[in-house]
Amino acid sequence: MSDAGEIQERKVGHLALFKGGHPSHGPTRTTLLEQVELIPDPLPELALADADASVELLGRRLRAPLMLTGMTGGAAEAGEINQVLASLAGRMGLGFGVGSQRAMLEDPALVPTYDVRAAAGPDALVLANVGIAQLSGLGLDRAQWLVEAIGADALCVHLNVAQELVQPEGDRQFVGATDALRTLCAELDRPVVAKEVGSGFGRAAAERLRDLGVSAIDVAGAGGTSWTYAEALRGDDRARRLGETFRSWGVPTAAAVAQTVGVGLPVIASGGVRSGLDAVRALALGARACGLAGPVIRVLMDEGEDAAARFLGWIVEEVRVAMVLTGARTVGDLPSRPRVLGPDLARWVEGTS
Image (tube, rainbow, N blue to C red; front, side, top):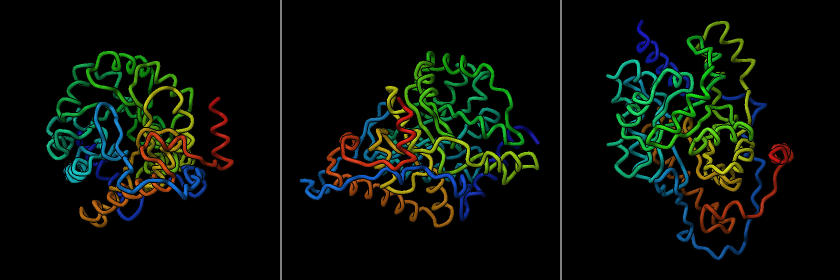
């Protein structure tokens, strides 16, 4: 089987894991978003219509602080999912990110499975996506092609070292990645977003990424989908052993946000965000926007497009209701609203100093 064929087969295998469930970090690892206790304001002096949930991100205005992040692509079924969800994101004023475009690099005939610009509309925020392991040998021309071929506004570079090390077909060598990322940030004519895939970031890593020139960070923390465990579910004996061992690896999403918001970059909080209240908790910690992936794909695959639209509509409504309940007229007001942090999250917050 060709490299492109192997990647397509892997994409379909990954999607199958979301039918009826998802590969989680396990019962001992949560996002810690539940430890952000927002104190109600019983006299908010706001109407629901006054709650302005819009945010500016990477040069685009989102009507709600939400992105459908790092979805999929590289196979016919994946392309159909991208088209449907990008259309929903565009109609609702949300951002949208495609999954890894490695398959497209191997076989340009797969570009249509990632090209969502027409579906999302001209004003939508669309993010392209490439892995850090592919970056060293990519070159500026091909990186530019990744974003231009799908009309993307920015390029996510996903830093999925744990997943690659567990995946049977994965990369094992990451030397030169730092220099490649620095060069990309300096030369690409689009913003570069550093994105994890379930392991999150700490403060030191965020500072290094800032100094390399990235324009934003998507923490993609622990507590949602565990891609190391996903590889265990579809892999060989080695993958199963490593995937089980490192299933809960990473920084919980809330802790990753707390660790990274002080470095001076917009932070996208993804990884286990399952409700509008989860999103508002992350926004109260200082995130600029929040990302969802697995839960949306699961609803779409299990229940269809209308159900996915309803699900996203409820998330947006929950964000706006939570804003009123805390007296926040804008998303930017949320970090100043009173809150109490649980002990596990407080320990991470204290570690940011």
